[in-house]
Image (cartoon, rainbow, N blue to C red; front, side, top):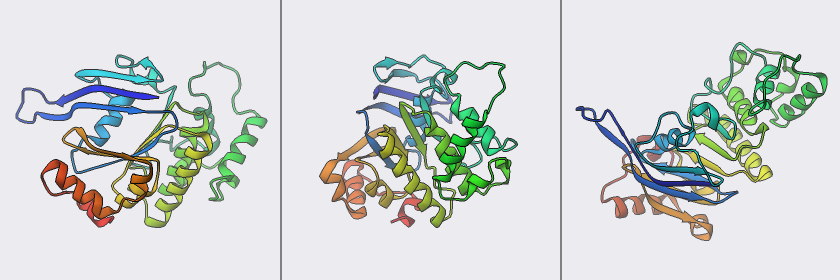
Length: 265
């Protein structure tokens, strides 16, 4: 479903701030893979997701989704087959629009826009049923402006919107990092349910090593813009946080340096 071939990206080339963010990165995901991504500060985790979604062009390499080369495709054209949830809960929704209107926008992803009246009764009923599945009581607030919701509620709505039309690839960029522990656990539970129910191919960047181990069928560790550890199946299930720390030091030759991840042990 996804193939990255020798991806390279350097920011601020030729200046004192030059930074090689991706260094010959290669990765292949099969359909239905739910892969968690961990790594220290500046490892290239979010940069990889931005490369896939087309936020900026890569310097070298190829990006293929479902066999289609999208390396030169602009961001807005990739959006029709990608779902994405950002770290900031305020990013994925339109604050001045209602829950109904946000859901309608998500439901029209990849479709032709027309001047016909939108949000008919049958569609509103469908949206209400979907929102009720979140278990947050928001199905009775469908006309409320999304900007009035809490960060956790907005993130749950964003997650629902990103999977409303099954994406070929779901990108989750530390989507629980800004939430309190209880809300984060709820959003992770919803993430697991939606990925399994729709058999989605997903990439989830996380700073929590326990979550990285317990969620998904595959785990990759990044360092200096490349993958240094890739584990799946029974080996992944039997991992412990201490194993990951030891593996990082063994492969990279240095100690793991990410305060948030160390606190999340």
